[in-house]
Image (tube, rainbow, N blue to C red):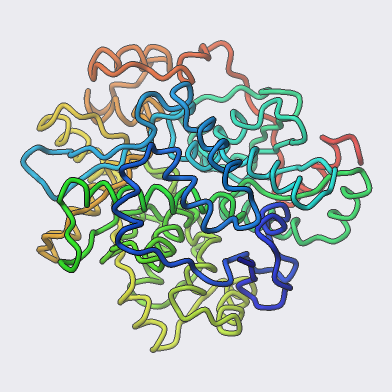
Length: 503
């Protein structure tokens, strides 16, 4: 399999070259030249395997220049009990009286976030890609983040030989807003900074830097390859495809899906679009996903594009209780447009150039109809999230984090409109302890957090919900946390060179 660009100019690359480079030179994003197809037997057998083997089976389809035994070995080490407990990913019925609604639990990793399922694979897969491309350069991975992706990148890549990571936390992000504290120094190869820019502005700046020949060549002169740990890099997409395939297989095993009798409804976040893109590829592979429901918060740019066929960039992003979705329009919208609208690089380039130059996208009538037929979108506000957290807790004793509560709210809203009997899979993306203030306000009353420290809130939330606190949230005391250094918009390039001592 080769990888091509959504813009159609960059020459086809091997999987190893695409992963190592991160993004093509023509300003687009890498996508597989052909999408592998799987049959009924392949899908139903997946759930019979340990999770690590199931992931390896999916990786084999997309990383065709990698050794299959090495992929299996990598997955065995990554999805170990030490990292993810006894069940790395599992399906859980949220309400015993609703056989159509399932949580796909993806919150048991080292940072208690869905990001662990892709981020932990980044170092070993890129190391294999380095061996396959036979270069000896070090890899610098940049990431823009609203919180969990940055924490996962720093945690995963700390002290990893051959890698350095720079995580830039957006101004609306959770760590410096009110939720999860951060320590500024993780390891000698890790750099964490606060940015005055929004997540979208950060992502765009990083994307521009990856195509900056002067910067790229200067780093190469110092034996450094510049790339990204964001989902702009295809290495972050494949693991998400894997757990969608796994989820569908589990539903077949539980007799909740039957061949020839419709598929499943999959509820995904907007965010940077990686979960949505992975869902599209899983569906195109032959996984029976009948409807993809995209959840946004009050930042409704992607919802507007799906529902109305148009997008106009808002001047200011809104900070919400779902910070991972505080993105007006995800960078991965380019892959969405490319795949949903017929893999046309010319038309994709036209739409994305309009976005870059004018801050707008206006799909033509045919493409508007196509995206509406392929996707649904539901927007959720903070009030409904808090209400859902409390309602689910009262009914089931299950403490949903704000993101997952938002996805359940989106599903119920969609289902009330559609009256669907499809089995639905909702991603359980985070531990509730990542959002102690939001959780405390929802479960214990508005104003409860006033005057209480982070450590006190964690302790009191643990007493209330009876769930053990993941180690990452107990490793820091309130006194350990100090402000991160600030990098202003437009200064990332200079900051990179200064941090590496190349300026």
